[in-house]
Image (tube, rainbow, N blue to C red):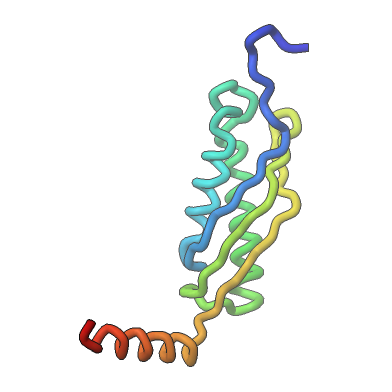
Length: 123
């Protein structure tokens, strides 16, 4: 039961970091999660310190997978999305998806060359 005029906070929130270099995913992920939970912090439903401990452990685990185990280059672009599920005063990340973009040297050179040629031609 809620008091009239009081807004019910969602217990499931989607998040997406957007493209970010692998070397910077941890900061971006922390910012995105904290921004998504801003209203929960204001309402004192969640403790930011407890959430940030969870995110720190998530970032450590992701680092172990990406960098230590798979050897993903730190300049590779990653995109992290998923859902934050709140339960009482804790959170859990569900349906997480990591997308990696690798640089295509051949395609990059081809596009660069063609664009430079077109820019050099008089209009």
